[in-house]
Image (cartoon, helix red, strand yellow):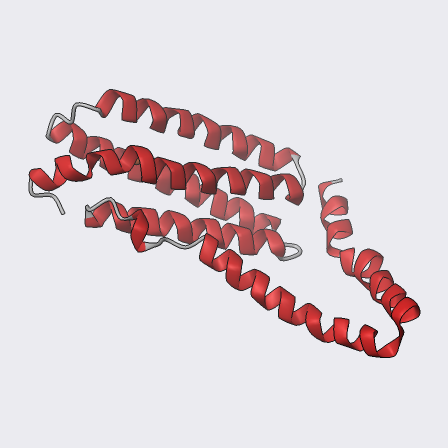
Length: 186
Ligand SMILES: [Fe+2]
């Protein structure tokens, strides 16, 4: 059943794109039809460039501690890898492997942050850990969902992970920057 859904999604070109171009040629003539054929790959390249940018770590996300910035960079890379895998047909096996790796690396990263917080008795440790725990549960839920659902649902999941990570870095993680810097951690 799962394979059937993936195959159908992979055939979107035949069922949607080809009739759409036929309609454009039929309704607007050869010139507009050819122009739209040229514009499609350009639009796809621009879309991919935009996506790559949205799944990239940016200097504005820096939390002021190198090792954590590196972890966050890796998490963004894994999300981009997952997005690319979901766009490839059949790419679900690869996407599953990346999601597993994303879960593993997220847990490692959370552990690293919490260990440093513990070392310096960071006052916000409990609240921060609670946020991490919630995300760990969500990741577990996502992995189960991933087994059952199709690629479209998985893309929504990925968007959720991306939004969560950006918000967590920008709001919660950045609260520890000055604290760790004052302890000599950079
Ligand atoms: Fe964190």
